[in-house]
Image (cartoon, rainbow, N blue to C red; front, side, top):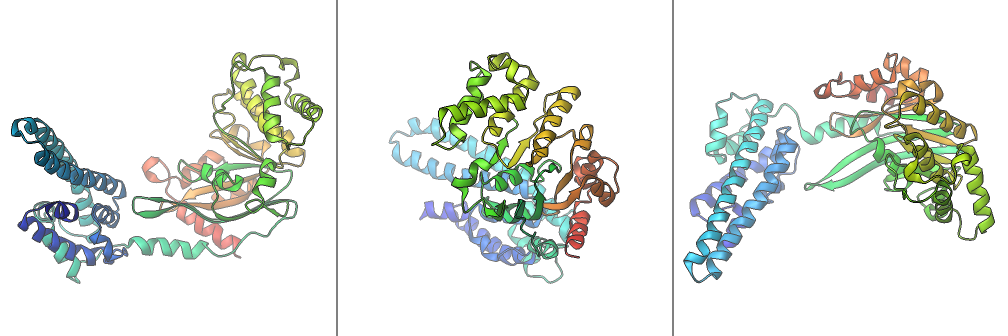
Length: 448
């Protein structure tokens, strides 16, 4: 019974259990006031995380939840060690170590809990002296704030989500028979007792022969978008390529999509030719004749200007050459849709320009090329369109713009792509914090 009490209440003393019950009784309506189901108050470890969400202190809530879980384990382990070791002297060292660990964990919880309480005080508009009551006896302020109508939060967690979701969730992109159509409703993961939405409501169409810049600040969902559209990490979405459903016919269509990641995994001891030949064996249909594979490799070598160095070892290549080989590996299968995640990283201006010009030529062959780059303005003249993703106030990636490069300048009122990123980035990282305004503005434009 004592072990069960430790798990449920974090203590086995009668006074501690009584105070914890009062705290849970007050926490239930407190969570509900912020739009979170009250029953979370009954779940050990999870309840402190949910309280942190009410305070706008989600990162601190993760730490306190993990520490609380560790405290419960340490408490149970201490009881087990004391019970199983017959000689008290033998158990004293182990128990002392566990007590020290318990103390460290509780101090960590206290520090992060103070940050959570500080957030609650701000959101409820109370005076700072409430902090002492939250620290010394959290049951009392939880009961008062939970049941008194005088104490109301300035915003609700769940309402904030519904408000913006209602603005941008309607509509979809028209399916192109020759091109890419993405209707991504949601890409989410399970994290810390809740569903975390990474990307939502991205609806767009791209015709063949276009080179597209994928723009957005850190964490806006650019790589998530590439993974979802390529089928590597499926989302709640419809992805149509050439009028066919990529998700439904993934095995048949997977080689119509090329994806060159930021970092390659090529073997340094192989030659360029053998590297591409191995790629052809993996990416071309199994019934492809050896002569056809070699012919395709020769063609790709010529397209990327690698024929003169076909016998060179990968480990001897310059940064620019290595990037071209990495891209050529994906191009062996002759994809209709080509994604590149920072292909110019680590390259100087001249080499980056040369590489992007090569990608422009690929797009001109009737392909769709979508590129992420952190230095877009030095090659922006090579792009046809730009997709802008931004984090809304709930930290969910959303579509803030999709259209021509000049249209993006006019839409955001900025001259450069870097200025566009700055205006949608949060103020905490030096941005203007205007993401929500542009997400809503583009939703209104798109829906007429």
